[in-house]
Length: 174
Image (cartoon, rainbow, N blue to C red; front, top):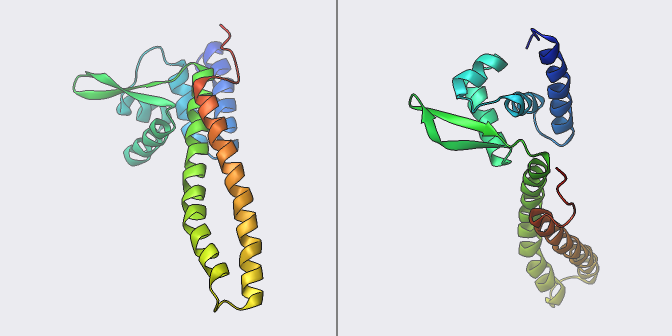
């Protein structure tokens, strides 16, 4: 991306900052650049237009767009341009923040609660089993206490995600 005007140069500074910020939160730097480019675009873009602007391979571009769509930072539009799909960035930073973080946090909750919910009954069974050696029973009980504490955290985190999705934590400023 070579800026051709002062405006483009200034835009590039913001695009770079967006990419750096998204990189901090685990998103690929180049995906952040793509989001930044699309953020400033005045019209929806095709994959080919994005590919041209980013100088990325078609497969990497498709992966980047899918990743941004999964985070709800970019949406595929129902209309098409000459039989090509059109994509647009979420330009409302409040909504983009909610979309990005609720998606990431919900994934963490789902993965961790799935594992914890599967393990707790087995730990409980091991604790209650007469054939479990006393030291093993004690260690299982310690693990069970830790996981019960984790359940409390993930219940809290789920409520936080629900509230974040509902817009509870901030009023949108225009």
